Image (cartoon, rainbow, N blue to C red; front, side, top):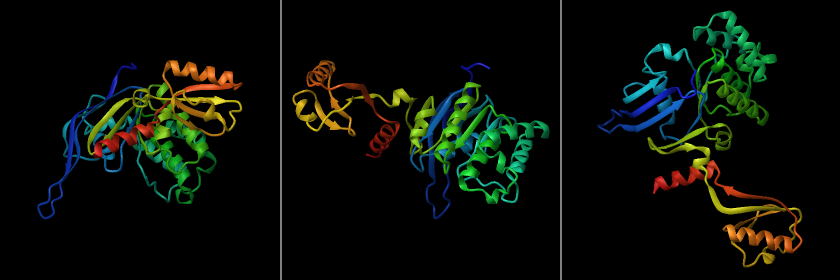
Length: 313
């Protein structure tokens, strides 16, 4: 399997939902989307509510029809059922059959995806153990908490060993330990060549695991790029000191701009290269021990909010 292989392609994708009421115009959810995702990528799909994210995913899963443009999954149209056997899906706010046990859910979904029972049971045990659900797998789904159902949902999306996985809010309701396990699983899957498509409102989670990100709003792509491209360094430099003291701002007067304390032992200052040297010299001359210096980067959340705000003007 080549890392350069294209798994998913979208060209000029449009979708309008018809109103049909009192002659009202329909709602255009997608307005000409172009997108390409390669094998082994962890791809983040971001956007505010109503941006068109879920519509696009459902088109790629052949759950929404009547669209225009081109969409290919493994080089085939989404309507080809053979593609879906190679795809795993964790929907947002999913519902498993409450009358089944977690183990029965795994076996049912694995066999529905075309796998034989023996291989499904072997993989189910491994996945349930990995997400911390093996000891509870013979309890009914109705007895599970939201977090437990979410972990079971992730396991079922992977039980047939898919090559492409759509995860819609995968860490919703999951505790911090569970979120870390999910991040590790996503990274391991990508290293094996599985392509992961993540839709999440937890942007710090996306920032930690995604290779590339698309920011969608009002049915259009606002930006696409790597995390580094979407979160550039800003002018502010962060300095960490062993024991800065209360008079630090006065000591640095005349050096740089925009002094701001950041906790007890750090501060930010906007400086150019010469100003950086001057700040270090000033701090050392006054007996300070510098424990860290770093250029502050925009967070993905900052970049996301700025783009969406600009688009609303």
